[in-house]
Length: 82
Image (tube, rainbow, N blue to C red; front, top):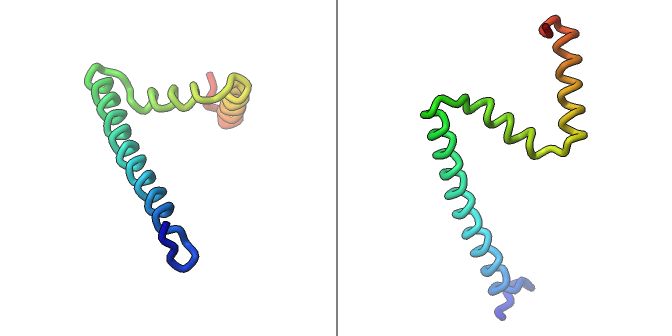
């Protein structure tokens, strides 16, 4: 391994190349997700709401419940609740 200024050049190159490959994969995945949302929108679904549902599904039930309770509390405080 070639050292340049105390840095293993080959190891550094390997890390950089791995990161670059992962960034390319991430960009491809982002494009795929965008296409799925576009397809859903084309079929009449509200993409903004779908994004909120996806975000909520990532939370565990306790966190989700806490957020829903706070949202309800804030809505009632502002006179937005029915």
